Amino acid sequence: MLRTVCLCAALLAAAPAGWLSIGPYGGHIQTVAIDPHDPDLLYVVTYRYPAEPLLFRSTDAGAGWQVAGKFTYPDVSCLTVDPFRRTTLLACSRGDVLWRSTDAGETWQTVALPGHANDLCADPFTNGRIYAGGSVQGAHPMPAFLSSTDHGLSWTASALDSGAGDCRASRADPNVPGTLYAAGDSGRLLRSTDYGATWGTRNQGLPDAEPALSLAVCPADPGILLCGMVSAMFRSADTGRTWLPVSGPQKVLEIRFAVDNPAVAWALCRDSVERVLVSTDTGRTWSGPASDSILYRATDLLVDPRDGSTAWVNAYRGVLRTGDRAQSWAYRNRGLNFADIYTIAVHPVNQHELYVSAHDTRIFRTTDAGDSWTQTRGFWCMYNGMCCAIAVAPEPGADVVYGFEGSG
Image 1 (cartoon, rainbow, N blue to C red):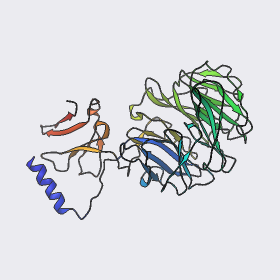
Image 2: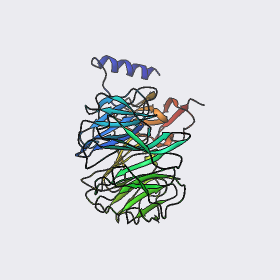
Image 3: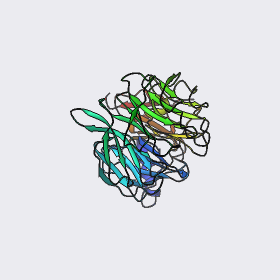
Image 4: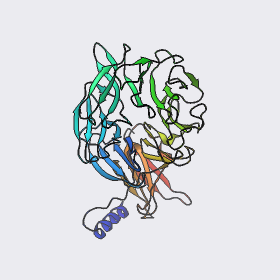
């Protein structure tokens, strides 16, 4: 303890006025978005309850991040960049509220919605058109399609069918103007060819009353659709008239086609394990790791439009990037400094070796006084409470590190 106090006093005496952040970086990322015209420009929204979530921006494809703005409500999701106004950003929130920024996220205003929105989708052809799948409240929640023609400033909603629940996925066909798709809890897939004015059901081959979680339309062939259900993924080659199940993906939260190579498709799955699968034949067959614990609680999937081998996901401990079609992932957290630090310990012999406990019982270790950090996976079993103290006992050959949980 005396050595630790002396070290802290020496550091404070030598430090200039103010403080310099040295990490560790990362934390719970609620959502991630990409600028469709500049794929090096990424945005993420953090989770900092009860503090206000921050918006971070990266201009180098996630290599480094800077704070761009903040929100005044802790729950923010479905961030998207308006393809016709790059400084206009939209994000969903809990309840019938939309967040809207016209200065690239520096400031935000709330917009009242006529229903609840689960996702956001910009029309690739029509300036100002934004869509959202969600629900409207009646005797029970009704699946609904929400649309805006003024870049998200005002909205209208229409109930989709008589099925109860939410519309969880809405997509605009990137090949055919005015063609839209929607699906959700009712298990019905719907298609419109008049910008959402009227809808027709296209369900042949889909399981009855099973929630649909995700949708994707092939950017090179408007007939090819992929629909992620709870039990499996389904594929259509005739604009949704008929569907066939695809082996492999289950509980598919997000599906993306690669723009530069539309035969490549990506699927973010969370059933008994969390993983990202990749197809190279427009979704007929899929491959990937059996599981990947690094993807814990990932919800969003972005594919680089310039390179179909590169993708990003948000996760519970930061932003992850792959450049080899999901064979390996690496954190892209430099500058994402917002996770709460609960305790710190300094090695009693090596003053450059430190341990810190960050949010969600993550333990990080540095051997170079904070220039670089590594996550110690040996503490991942500590799920019952936060780590409130760390102690290091030097031993010949290998030190012994103790962690103390708040729950005992």
